[in-house]
Amino acid sequence: VPPPPPGPPSFTGAKLVDDRDHPWRAPQRGDQRGPCPGLNTLASHGYLPRNGVATPTQIIKAVQEGFNFDNSAARFAVYAALLGNGNVVTDLLSIGGKTRLTGPDPPAPAIVGGLNNHGTFEGDVSLTRGDAFFGDNHSFNETLWDQFVDFSNRFGNGFYNITVASELRFHRIQQSIAENPQFTMLGLRHISAYGEAALPVNLFVDGRKTGSEKGQLDLESARSFFKEMRYPKGFFRAAQPGGGEGSEVIFLSHPTSPGRNNATVNSFVVDDSLGSILDPCKVYTEFVNTTVLGLYPSPTGVLRRNLDIDLGFLYDAFGSGLPNCPQVFPYGRA
Ligand code: HEM
Ligand code: MG
Image (spheres, rainbow, N blue to C red):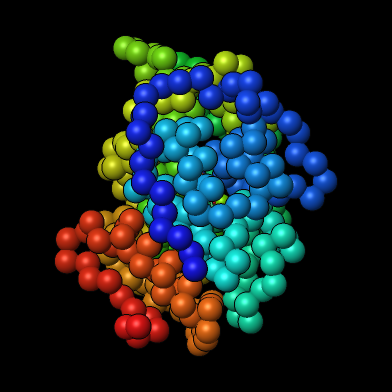
């Protein structure tokens, strides 16, 4: 039976996390790494199993300990990831590609593709990873990095901050509309694209920084996380629990609609069928009724039981806090 997620830790201040108990080691053959620089870093320092396959409980503890990621944001992200990309029977998720290490797959159309799977959680317009259409949606992309640096120089005086995040987030969307005929940004991705642009500002900046240095991510540290999957030497985690704070500022500076290109470049059409950042309850409801139900149309036995339990954990973290957002039960009430 999937255990309930851990709560917040008792100490939530800054502390050394690049410590002697968590030495960096390069991933070995077969170790999974993927589109999330936060989880990649935690695996390469041993906060997560170094093979990149972990349970929700392990992931929540690791992101809290290693980055001071906020408990409810961690629960939301991890259950969305498990339900979209993990094995709910074995309670294991790959932070990279598909692997036998997550155990026997439930029947198709279940994918259990790990975080690299395109369209469940991973999506287009990532800051340092290419769109799936161009062939690699998970590896560090040197060309996109150059653009990250350029924007940080032009809008952040050599640092990545909320202003840079606002400009680069909008630019990446315009870029995909102009270059990727299969561009999509729907539902959960319309929220996560903005949240992920804020995460480096809140969680990749050393927790000892104060005053004008707070919220300013230097490019050497940024590259260490995004490319090397490694803490900057002697890194302290954030001084308070955080996550996507500021994503509303990023969105409001250049608001966009969820939508897609219509099989050719520059053919953007609005599509809010899976919700939007302005309608998070619909994102929750459609994630369950479209994404999860699409992967698991008629589950039985332990699979069905665990889906019900994990959907409850997802609702506790995401839907329950939203106004007028009742829990949905795609398989009926137990
Ligand atoms: C991106 C999952 C925690 C920082 C992503 C993506 C996934 C993901 C699937 C790819 C989305 C995309 O860009 O297409 C998760 C899960 C987490 C988690 C399941 C567990 C709770 C964290 C933490 C941090 C972080 C703790 C920072 C300390 C980022 C950043 C990106 C990202 C900055 C965007 C990368 C880019 O645009 O190039 N995450 N993440 N994540 N994640 Fe995480
Ligand atoms: Mg992506």
